[in-house]
Image (tube, rainbow, N blue to C red; front, side):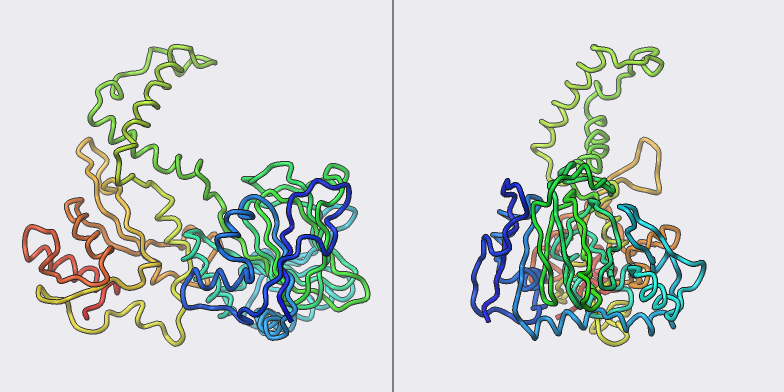
Length: 465
C-alpha cells in the first residue's frame, strides 16, 4: 500500500480539517528506520516527506500528520514500548513521580493519582483498569535500547537534547487536559488508536508549558485518529489534547521532544557575555563607570538607554568579524546532558583507548565527531584580569544513559579536555580532515604535537590509522 502523508496546515476553517484533505502520495519507501546516519534516520522517521520540505513548510510553523498503512512499520513501532513492558520495568525499581505518573483528565483538569514510593505493576494495572487512569512513563530511552538508538541519532541530527515520554491510556479515557508545550513534538503511535485535537496556539513557539481552559481555545483546527505506525509532528506552543476512543483497546504512544530553550534568544544570552568581555579588553568606553546612583533609580534614564544602544551597535559591528564566539553554557550543557553513543555490548570502545599509541609519524582521524563539541571559553580556573581564552573539548562518550533527561544536576559531570588557545588551529585541522599526519599539525614543537594527539587518544576521540 502507498504511504499517505497529510500536511496538517493552518487553514482557517470553521471546523476541523477534513480527514482526507491535503494528501501527499508516495509509493514505496522504507518500512523500518534507517540508522546509517543522523539525517538518514530523521528522513526515514518522517517518510515519505523529504527533509527539505519538512523544514521549509512545517518546522516551527504548522503540524504534520503522516498516516501509513505499513504492517512491518506498525510492528516495529509496537516493539518500542508496550503496556506489558511495565511489569519487567517495575521489577527494576521504578518510583512514582521520578519514573512514572498516574493521572486522568477530569472536568478539564489533570488529576494525579500517584502513590508514594515504589511503583508496583499490579497497582498500576489496577488504577489503569478500574480508575481509567493514564500511565505516563518518563524517559524510557533509559531502559529501552531501540529508543536510545533513535534518540541518540536525533540528538546528533538536531544538536539539541531529545527526550521522550510514553503515555498509555485505557479505552474511553483521557490523561491530560488541553495544553501546550515548550518543545517540538513528534508523536509515534505504538499500540491501539488515539484521537487527537489540535488548536491554534495562543503563544506561538512558547517557552513554557501551560494548561489552557477548554472555553478559551475555540474549535479544533485539526482532528484525526492515529494508528500504529503513524506519526504526528507539531511545533511548541500548539495546543492539543488526545483521548483513546471508547470500545477499543488501550492506546500507547511515545512523545519524542526536542528544542527546549534552543532559540536565537537563548543563543544570544549565551554568547553576549563573552562578546562584551572581549570588547571591554580593547575599548575603554566599555570599562568606564556607570553614572552615580544609576542603580538606585526606578526607571532607566534616557542617557543610559542611549548609551546602551550605542554599546549594542558597537557589539554588532564587532560580531561581524568574529569567528569564534565565547559560549558560556549552551554547548557544554548540551554535551554533558545528552545520551552516550549507542552501542551493543559493554561499550569498552567509549572508555578505553584502543589500537596503536599515536606518535609524531602517525596518521590520525577523529572518531565520534557527532558526540564532541569544540568551543572557546575563558579560563575557568582564573577570575582575575589576566583571564585568558582557552579551547574546551567536551564529549558525551562517558555519559550515563540512566541519567538522561532526569535533572540530576548534582550527579552530572563533564568529560573532556582543555588546551591553550594557541592549539586552536591544530585542533581545527583534526576536526576538518578525514585524516591528518601528526607532524603536519600547526604547533610550534614536536612535543606539543605528540602531547595533543596523545590527550585526544586517551579520551578515545581519535584513532591511529
